[in-house]
Structure formats: C-alpha cells, structure tokens
Length: 135
Image (cartoon, rainbow, N blue to C red; front, side, top):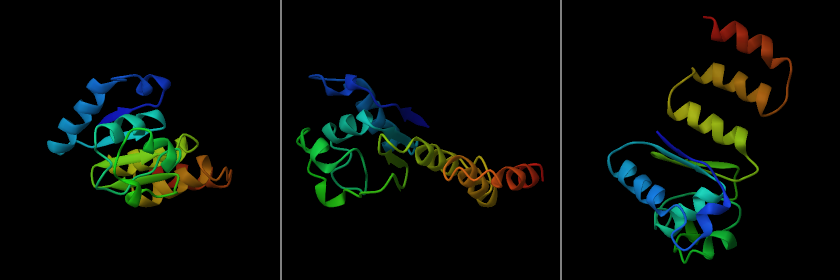
C-alpha cells in the first residue's frame, strides 16, 4: 500500500507530482493507495479523483486543481473506492480504520472494537478489543 500524507507541499506547481504519478501506477497495478488531506489535492490534480467516489477537505479545495470529479465528492470523513482510500484532514482515525480494513489487519469485530476505542473514545471497548484480539 502507498500511503500519502497531507501537507502544503502538494500545492506547488508540481507539488509532489512524482508521488501522485506513483499513485496512478500503483492503482493500475492493483496496489492500494491511501491519501489524506493535501494528498487528495495531488490525486485530484493527477485526475485520479475524476471518476470515483472520494473525499477531502471540501469540493472547493479540490476544484482549485482543475479536477472534474465534483459529482463523485462525498462529505464523509473517509471514503474507500476499490483500492483507493481518501480522507478529510480532520479524520485521521477514520483514515487509519480504512487502511487497517483494506490491509485486513484485524477481523471486522476487532476493527469495530478498535474504532470504538480510538474513534468514539469509548474506554469500555478496550476490554473487548483485548479479549477478541487475543483469540
């Protein structure tokens, strides 16, 4: 999996363009790609968000790239479409959850406990996480 972190470096003339092009190659080869925050800007500029469901900071943010995917924009913390994961800059836990799901790191039940603990801040999930993760 190629994980692309957000940053202002995606905004320059060819801001991190080599990584956006690597994302294109990865997706073409069936390698998952995950992008959060500014990295979604780079994917939009590369045309990778024109035809698939995705999210980011706001559709207006991505519009600055000249992309044509506004009809596919979702106002959600994180969106997974096949091998592509995109996330809002304010959703790092949801981003991590989608990565863990895509990589099949945990069973769905353990991942649900993990998200209850870290995403929903439910301390009672810790016991469930430990109990199910040790099975």
